[in-house]
Image 1 (tube, helix red, strand yellow):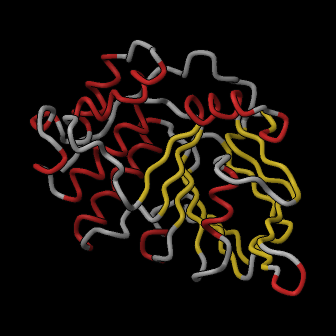
Image 2 (image 1 turned 180 degrees about the vertical axis):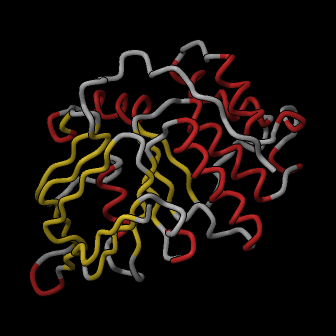
Length: 244
């Protein structure tokens, strides 16, 4: 079981006047050309306030993963714009975009993406080391302890369960203090009990840690833990509802 994370200080250098963590405006994405073109996303607009846990749902091919990749700066829209912490991604050069992804955007995927030769703590600290910055040790300790990983700090990923590995991936993302954390089917490779635990970890990250989360999922049960559910069909938002 995990324990509740304590509040962390505001991210140094992050704009505190921008109430929206990430926003998409009239976002479209086409693949291919002519008669074979696929309209993966069609003029989608979505704003996610800071501290909100938003779940994006939809059937396969609905555009939910495309939307996440565009909002996370992993893909380029055919039309429309994306702002993260008030900054327009399309106006950035490659270096600025890389820095934005490192400092403002966190990722949690189905594949845990842990380096197998590094310990739990080393995996959590990896982004800081890549950026050449000194990690906030107090925050690292709070997050690792809060996610129930204190006694696993020196373990390798191969010595952990799937749920523990996913918690390491979440810890790594939170420690980076991103403006928004994108989670792509974070429970997809886990059994139902472990998946429920991971959803609880994400919920707690939003409640106790103030983390903004955008989670893509096909699971209605998983989506119900979020503050808000956005449903896509055929590249368009067909429902946007508040859970709580």
